[in-house]
Image (cartoon, rainbow, N blue to C red):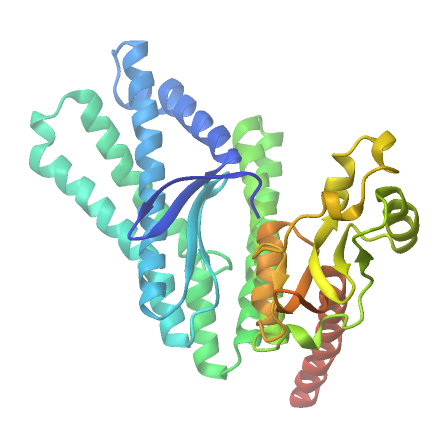
Amino acid sequence: MFGRRFQLFKIFGIPIGIDLSWIVVATLVSWSLARGYFPMVAEGLEASTYWAMGITGALGLFASVVLHELGHSLVARRYGVEIRGITLFLFGGVAELASEPPSPRSELWVAVAGPITSVLLSLGFFGAVVVAGGAMPLPLLAVIQYLAFINMMLVVFNLVPAMPLDGGRVLRAILWARSGNLRRATRISSQIGGMFGFVLIALGVLAFLQGNYVGGVWWFMIGLFLRAAASSAYQNVLVRRALEGEPVSRFMEPDPVVVPRAISVRELVEDYVYRHHFKAFPVVDGDRLVGCVTTREIKGLPVEEWDQQTVGAIARACSEENTLHPDDDALEALAKMSRSGVSRMMVVERPDRLAGILSLKDLLRFLSLKIELEGDGEASIERRRAA
């Protein structure tokens, strides 16, 4: 989902970070508030004051988004779900859950925790205006009124019953409780999410044609994002069903291609990389695993030194980043590959004993076949029920 991510700090042990795209939207929000919204609701102020209000309003908005996602995260953690972090990005924020909530009830409470947090924030800001608004300077009053309003708008938008919005998760929890089938509940709520995304795309095109170029492009992009995220939510459930609880040993290649440490780098390139088309190889000394070598290490060595240097000289030691154990959960292995960007991982029984290689390509091929077969099976069941 994200490009380059930067961690800022932690709250309750949960990492809070930003994606580079957040900087773009933070700038746009600050600009629109300083040049459009605040001059309309608080007339007669200096341009520098409007910019200070715009920046403060944008920071307040994103602090509200973090608290919204923190509400989801803390409730999810209470139900035993690991939280990898909260990330602010182009379209707001997302709490990265390592797994789905374990039951419809927990799914419901995780889903509503965010909107409840936003409602409390909105009421708190409204309360501050009612209690102390008369004593506040106009710029501060306008910013607090904006935050009260925008938090309530976040609630209204998020409760639309379409995945991946909170309302879509509430719908999924209800369907899951009624049918006992998480996959079917996710499919229905994701389909609704896809249709809602298409509606936003259409509204964006209409707004663009009517001259609202910025608003039109924004709604168009949000619609595209929601359609992609809705589809991803369903695919994630399918992946979990296929891999969760399965050991890595089921999917690994038990007799992988290995590279002797004594051969030259040129032999590695000519006889292994160009022949097998892999980007990473385990390096062995007899029967003993001594490390691994990738195309990254090869590229770091001048071509004229390929004949002089051995593979053992450029190989790097095995580490947590590039190794798995045969009994590791395949779903966690896939997540590890995704986080590290490594497409081939060594499966190691002991520090010097290679059991096999797990490749992302093999996992994805298995997933494709399983999803295709189980999808057809579910369709057949539904057709028989309809008959």
